[in-house]
Image (cartoon, rainbow, N blue to C red; front, top):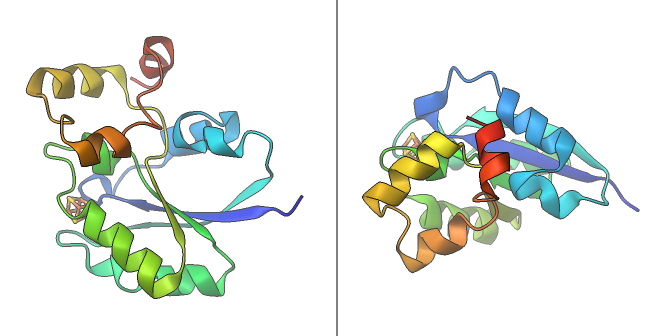
Length: 147
Ligand code: SF4
């Protein structure tokens, strides 16, 4: 089976993040990486959006394509920030249309503390965010492991 090369774009709010949760989830095939359960994958790119309104989204995918990346993940920070990134659906359309990459929402499981706060805020009640968070909601035990 062919190896999948993937890239991760993180929300610039979390630009100092060392990527530990994403890398652990990728290794364990948890959260949005569960889709690769029986697949060999290589993390071939990791960058930030460049800060609102996401200037690096315009350019980073070009380099990813040159390096063989076919799947781009918007890190879970896009979904759990206060507020979640307001540009996600546009970014997805742009990257898909211009670069032909597959965009996946989320990386590691949503940490329990963010889950509880967003449930209280009813943040994810829109049709779009219900769909965007479906890979990373997971179950309580997994969410607690990522707190
Ligand atoms: S909210 Fe969106 S555009 Fe703003 S820094 Fe985060 S990912 Fe980038």
